[in-house]
Length: 147
Image 1 (cartoon, one colour):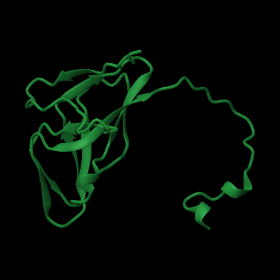
Image 2: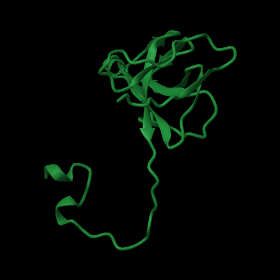
Image 3: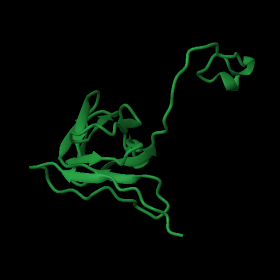
């Protein structure tokens, strides 16, 4: 029995350089690599919204998540606000907020992989006000399980 694939519609932004559509680097990859549609010099202490040149429309009941690439982190390039949520009703170009940690700068070229995108199920949820039971072993947060 074949499994039905979800289809995410992609539109290229007019005037943006053509970059590859998101794709998996290997058959076991969890995310689809997202490429830069611009050449940009990332400078330490500054956040740049790097263009992808792409707009997305997810199927009903889903949204996209943009995640950092671990290989960039080894070079001092981090994605701010990770993971980023791309709501199903967002209709503008997706941009990836990147910053450089070290002194000087880091060059991103058109076509460089700058993030990963994943499709996520958005399950119907409701919030109801009431009393939340206390679990004594799970209080304090921020490393509390290691104390």
